[in-house]
Image (cartoon, rainbow, N blue to C red):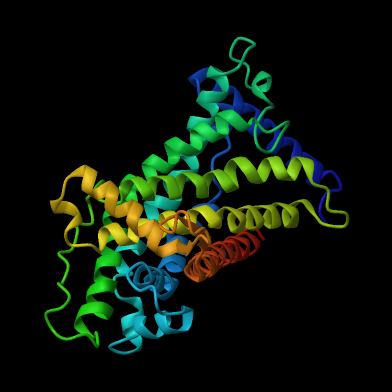
Length: 347
């Protein structure tokens, strides 16, 4: 039989080791947030689960890409067009984002926490104490909204640089397959796009990709912790509450990220975007958003028949549904993989 004090001794030794690591981290000038390094299951989830999830959801991502150039088809029709050329065609271009997903999933957490810790100390009114900036971290004390929001912008910039080349290449390959190679339109009516390089960090549409990433990260890192602090869910555990808040905030901001995502897809699948001036590019972007999401309604005013009012188009609902489905699928699958690995490897 195990010694009755064995469990307590192990816990004491573990606490001493944690305290020793914290002392070493403070001596080295490491932020408290960065002292909590990811565990092995979390690292494995990012290294293998992230690429698996991103590749698995390629058909949904490609359907969104086609929706940026097709305002007449519904969700089902876009998914059918994705699979033009056979079942394997649905995963056209999915390899590039899957490869980049590994550094993307592994880097964004540490980058965000490093930036968040730095801005907490910088904005602290009490001589650099993180607690004075709004708490001791996301897990302990009050959530500091402003430092977290700024850190989300920095993390989004890193994510955009990491993923622009692979995501734009994925969109271009999906367009070439469904809209050119297997299109019902006469040959020559649509031009095959030249593919971006995977290592390209910026280009047409990168601005909208940055804002999409920034808002998406902020929904989970900044908005969701604030919601958890102020919303009470009786009978719901802390972990379940965190997941519900993360998913709810992600779905809510999809009303903004869906147009940003579609604008990115439009810009990277328009052959003439890279050959026109910046002013013309802005004009094309504004025109796309108006045509995609607004429907003009003539005002019933005989004195000024040329004036119009606007209403939201049905395409806005279509893109919102597809974007929400994609985000929810990625989030749910990744969290399921992470929870499973944590449960199995920590036994």
